[in-house]
Image (cartoon, rainbow, N blue to C red; front, side):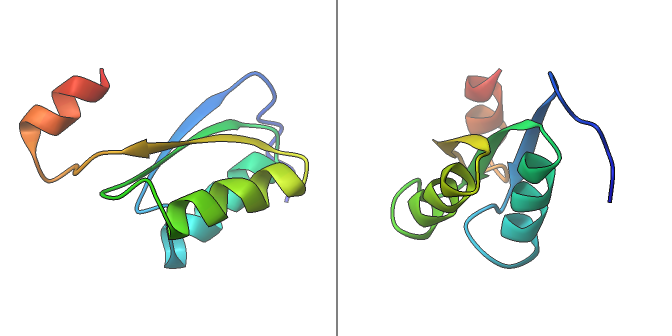
Length: 76
């Protein structure tokens, strides 16, 4: 896959596991800086962010419940 996402930022929800984590890893591998979002920024989300960094990507962990309008507004 060649998406050429250099200088782009991706916000990926549910990034701690499953499809969300795979998407975050793929976007980072294609050059995007990733904001990996999940309800709990510890544990699995930190593992995902460390894995992205170990593969040469850039990501940060963000704790937010995107089911809450107030939490989403705080992200902005």
